[in-house]
Length: 168
Image (cartoon, rainbow, N blue to C red; front, side):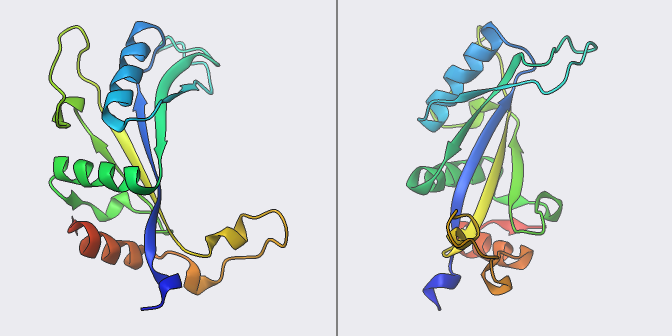
């Protein structure tokens, strides 16, 4: 197979929405650091929502972006937690996909602590092929050729062969 046609995991973004700042967000940030091994970044609310007590600009969630070897290791663990099953509705047309993990306690080494509670997280995965840089560089930027783009079917095949994940 052509080396430029091989898919790889470009990045994995793990997001934990808490809905409020303060102590709850601090606990979520610490959990995220333990699970992923990277320092999380706090995200702010985009709009004010008085029904939930959220105001614009207030920190309400945290996220971590994983790349390279760490991303692959995290994905293997996350796929084991969701029993290596995904739905076709979790994929977009560009072959990226997302899934949720209901409890942080499902990760190895994590246990339930009544002081912390239970937090869920969203995992968003972006797949790419080598050569995608031509569409992102500043000098001589070009459109990515159609054959170099990741299609929905390509990502399904990649997940089946690399991580043994079934989509149904």
